[in-house]
Amino acid sequence: MGPGDARRILAGNRVSQKCESVFFCVRSHAMSDAQLASGDSATDLPRDSHSTYSLAIVGCGPRGLYCLESFARVFAQQSLAVPVVITIFEPSRDPGAGNIYAVDQPHFLRMNYANERIDAWRDCQERPKSNLSLVEWLERHHPTLANPDGYSPRAVVGEYLHDCFLQVCDQISESFVVKICRQKVTNVERLESMWKVSTEQDSILVHDVVVTVGHEGWRAPASLPPVDSKRFIKSVFPVDRQLSMACVPPGRRVAVRGFGLTWIDAALALTEGRGGHFVRQQGALCYKPSGAEPAAILPYSRTGRPMLAKPVKTRMTIPSQWDEIWKDGSRQISEVTRPIDQGAFWEKIWKQILDSAAAALQVTSPNAETSATISQWFEWWRTSNFDSRLTLNLMQQSVDVALGRIPPNAPFALGEAWRQLYPALINCINHGGLCEEAWPAFRQIEVEMERLAFGPPAENVRRILALEKVGVVDLSFVSGATLASDAASLRLVTPQNRSDVDLVINAVIPSPLETRSNGPIAAMFQRGILSRQNRHIGFDVDEKGGPTASTHSDAAGLTVFGRVTDGCILGNDTLSRQLHPEIENWAASIVPRLSSWKQRN
Image (cartoon, rainbow, N blue to C red; front, side, top):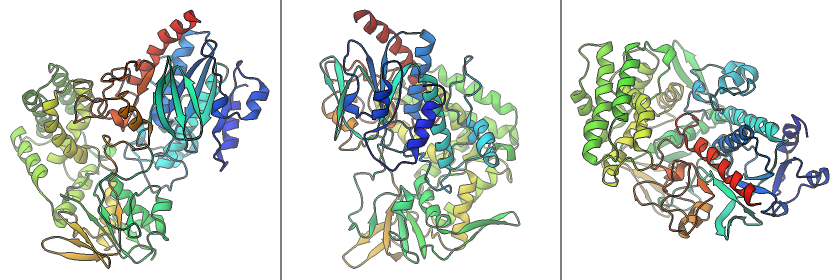
């Protein structure tokens, strides 16, 4: 099989609606043409542990792709003459993209991560010119989207990630046998010296298994309002199925539980996704309804605190002095002695973030807020419930700052300090850097800084503001409302107001600490293969992704990456390959394992 053959095989299968176990196979010397053509099931993989080294990757969204690429690159660098079979378990249509970046989702669902920050490849000296960043890839395939500051549709980023996956398959087609099983894994368990990976239909034995299941599919959190299923939609995604006109008929009054990023996707699916469109008039964004929208979309949440717009750096005037402020702040955080107790967190970490934000503001305005006044503003933000007027004002201010219409303010400076110091924070806190007793304090800061620093692009905030202006979105119940239901009606209720609604949509996704009950993570937790010593964070893994708090007798050969390790590893939802070294560490650790296996066999 020569270069491009794997890509052609995948392209041929990509349009298939079949759901068989095997999606495709990349042949090496270990497989005959007859085997390649047969499309064997997962149970037909080579099982002789003495002749072939086997690796399973469970889940092939971006992290599964990164694991495959890192392993293949390290393997090639070491010139290891070892026969290897890689089995990738990924039920979605496009490996590399997974569910979150599915290529068939509508284009009004946009990224919350700027184009310039997305690069599926490690930035290293031996990087081939064909390994393109997203912006470089967009210039070739979607030139109108190739703005470094832009936020592309998630589907387009999925195309890019899937294309990178195909490229990796081309590069390894002469070295490995690669198979993809289009089934969900239900269990991973130790069986003597191997790992048994099981789906509902099949199981295989492998030497190493890497679990990168991310969100574990589209699902709702365990605790939901007690509303009958005919009037309650448990998940926003996939929007073309969950929020179709059959599920949410036009003209209905719709309550949406949650006020984060998923709420924005729901609102756009019910408006722009139904033929409405946004137009620019005298510098403002205006919404033109299609007539297929709900009569009203009413989000409700505990506090009404909104996600603020990310900056458009090319529209803002960013002082060059800020770079030194972030460098100094990062250095100060990096020098904090681990483990960090609660007092050290407040005095050395959080104070440094406040000081950095204040220093940045004082560059632009000598009379700007001090660390103390920024701290006071944050306490007001953290402890207040916002009414609709205040929520709208804060959203509009964040857009105006993001587009350079007004100077940076306290919420922007705090968000920017968090963004810029986040890599240092990761290095400081990851893998046990923060004492268990300090985690409640950190979590109350983190959840609010997510709203200030990692919100939607300004264009999406502008869309919500435009929808509110024409009355399609109603924020009257955004703070402190409860949902009351009986056999005849549904109502949103506050001490001051109440409103009947026809349907409720859940726009709250499960916490990283809440695993799928019938998934492989829950099964491994029940068996003691995965464990956590700190109840405030996810499963404990080391710097190579290996379980460290396992009560199982032998977890060697098991690696876990992604949301389920949240807290042990911060920032798991990012596409960045620069923030976290764990995947590269794991790939490097495979080399001595392969060498040792080769010597034994």
